[in-house]
Image 1: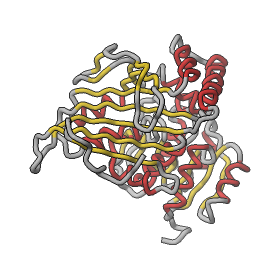
Image 2: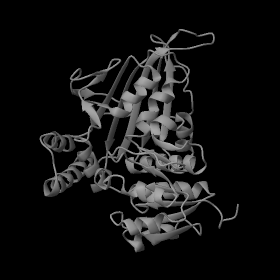
Image 3: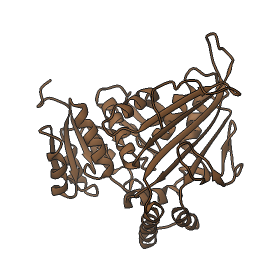
Image 4: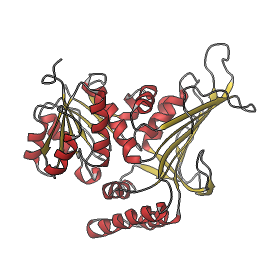
Amino acid sequence: MTPRTAPLIGIVGGYGAVGAAAARRLAAEGGFRLRIGGRSLDAARALAAGLGAAAHAVRVDVRDERSLADFGRGCRTVLNCSGPAYLLLDHVRRAAHAEGADYVDVMDDGSRPVPVPGRTAVLSAGLNPGLSGLLPGALAQGLAPGARFTGACAGLGALTRTGALDYLLSLERDYGTPLAEWRGRVVPRALRAEEDFRLPGVPRPLVAHPFLTEELVDRARELGFVEARWHNAFDGPALIGVLRRSRVGRLAGRDLAARADELVAAGALDAAGRDPYQLLWGRLDGRVRGGQRDGSPVRRTLVVRGPDGSELTGLVGAFATVAVTEGRVPYGVHRAAAVLPPREVLRWLRDSPAGPTIAESERTPGTDAVPAMEAGVL
C-alpha cells in the first residue's frame, strides 16, 4: 500500500481537544491518510502540519449538508469528534453514509439510528459512554454469570463548552436513571448519594451520585450480572452545585448556553491549583469459570487514569476508527461497548504515546491481592 492508496479517514472537529488526540494517535499508528476538518481552516491546517505529509486540512461546517458531503467524499471512514452531539443529532452520520463512508462517533447522538446496507457505524466510542462500558467486559472474562459490578467515573480539570452542553443535554435524554441499580432489572431509587466516596489514587473523599446508564444496563444483561451500579463522582463543590441546579426543568436556548458557561467556570474553580486527572474505576465480584479454580470466588478491580478526559475520549475513538476501517466490525449500527474487544482497547491505550495508566488486581476475598493481570501502576 502506498501513501496515495492508504485508506482516508476524515476527522470532523479534528483540531479540538478530542479530535486532535484521535488524529495524533492515528498518525502515530500509520497506514492511513487523514483529513482534518472544522470551521477554522487555519486551525485545521496548523494541526495537519504537525502530523506529517499524510494529513491535510479541509474546512467543514457540520450544520451544512453540502459541506459535510464534500468533506466525506473519498473517505473510507468518518470520525465525528464535533458537538454538541445532542444538538447535531445524526447529521454527520447520514452525510458520511451518503458518500459511501463508514462512521464512528465518540458520542451517542440520542437519535434512533437506522442501519444503512453495506455500511458500518459505531456510536458512543469515547470515554463515558464508551470506555466505561468496556470495563465490565474486561473484568468479566473467565468468570461465570452472576457477578456483581460497581463502577465510577471521576475527574478534575478543564471542561470544554461542547462537553458541558452534551453533559447537560444527556441529563434529559434518557441516557440513564439517577439513583437506580440493576438487579436483573432496573430498580429505581434503590441508591442514594454518597458524601464520602473513595477511589484508588484520589486522596480526598468524593461526592458520588449513582446513575445507572443504559450502557451499563446493556452490559449487565449481556454478561449476566445479578447486580450493577455506576457512580458519577465529583471532586469539588462548584461543579456538582451547578449540576444539581440543572436537574430542575429542561434547558434550551440562552438558558442552556448560560448553564453550560456556568459548568465550565465551575470546573475551572474546582481544579484551580490542583493536578488534573480523569479516572475510571470498576470492581467485579464473581466466581471463576473452568480450570483448577472453577467456582472459586474472586474480586477483580481495574483503574484507568489519565490527565485529561478529552485525550482518553480521542484515543478510544481512534481505536474504533481503526477497527471499522480495517473491517473488524460488522455492518450495521453498534454501540462501542457492545462490539469493541475490551482487552485490545486497553492495550491500545497503554501503547499510546500519551496513554493512561492502567492498573488491575485480582484477589480471593479475605486474602491479599495477587499480581496485576497486566502491567500498570498507579
